[in-house]
Length: 89
Image (tube, rainbow, N blue to C red; front, side, top):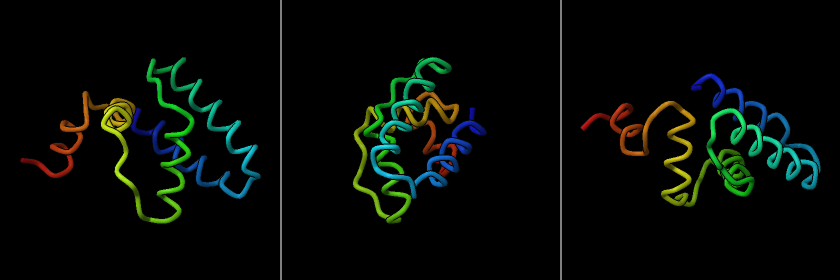
């Protein structure tokens, strides 16, 4: 699953030069694939904000629900577990 998340980020980054409408369609497709494959409902708008934050290297804090879903996609049970894995307690 971690490899899939890395692929998702690379793929979204590669496509950022496309027209906005095409990107929105891609986010919708990625969102649908995440739901089909992992049963994780991550909105296209959340994926769009994630890509935007990566381009600007600044981020407005995502909602807790989004953080938990991204954590599940990365192979953790929730956001706290992911933080413990990276930074410990």
